Amino acid sequence: MTMRFVVPPNWPPPPQGWQPPLGWRPDPRWGPAPPDWQFWQEDRRRRSWFARHKVATAVLATPVALMVLMVGAAGLGSGAGSTSTAFADPASGGPTPVTSNPASAPPSTSPTASPDAAVASASARAEAEARQAAALAAQQQAEKARARAEKAARKAAKVKAEKRKAAAQKKAAAQRAAKAKAAAKARAARLAREKAAREKRQRSSKNCTPGYSPCLPPASDYDCAGGSGNGPMYVQGPVQVTGTDPYDLDYDGDGVGCDS
Image 1 (cartoon, one colour):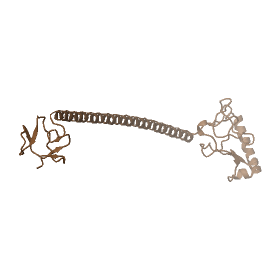
Image 2 (cartoon, rainbow, N blue to C red; image 1 turned 45 degrees about the vertical axis):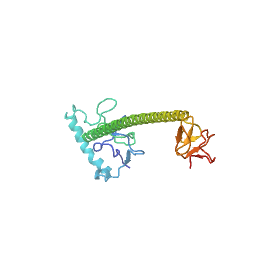
Image 3 (cartoon, rainbow, N blue to C red; image 1 turned 180 degrees about the vertical axis):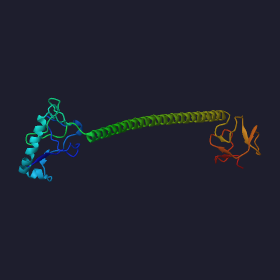
C-alpha cells in the first residue's frame, strides 16, 4: 500500500511529489490543521505502468543506471552540485533529500517554504485580519463616542430639569409671598374699618339719649311734635322706646312713642 502526504485544505498546496523531511515544521501563518486530520493517507490515485510492474521496471532501469554511471565516470557529473530543492534542511541549512518511505517520515502538517500562492494567500489573510481589526477598533471607538454623547445628553437634560424645577419653585414662592402680602393687607384694611366703626358707634352712643331709636341727642326735655308739650325739643314720631323713657314719649306703654 502506497502512502502520500496530504496537506489540510486551509494550507497552501505543496510541490508535486513533495514529502516533509525530518525536523520540518509548518509556517505558523497557515493556521492549525483541522482536528483529527490524517497527513499520511493511502494513495488511491491510478498508478503508472512502471509502478504497477515493479519487476519489469527494475530490469529496464538497470541498463540505464549503468549508462549513467559510465557517463559519471567520464567526468560529466563529478563536479556537479547536488540537486536543488525548494525546501531547506532544518539542521544544516542545506538541501534536504526527500524520503521515499512514508513510515520513516514523521507525520507533519505542511511545507516549510510556501510557494507564491501560499505567500499571496498568507498576505491576503493578513490584510483581511488587519482590516477586520481596524473595523473592530473603529466600531469600539464609535461605541465609546456614542456612550459619551449619551452620558453628556443625560447630564445636560438633568441640569435643565433641575433649573426648570428651581425656577418653578422660585415662582411658586413669589406667588405665595404676594398672596400672603395681599391677605395681610386686606386683613389690615378690615381691622381698620372695624376699628373705625367701633369708634363711630362709641361716639354715637355718647351723643344719643339711651333707650330711643332713632337717636335723640341729650336735652332737658322732648315732646312729640304737634302735641301740647312745651319742649324745648320736639321729635317727629314714631320713636322706638326701649329704655326707661325719661322724656315720657310712650304714653300708652306699647314701646312706641309719638305714634298718635
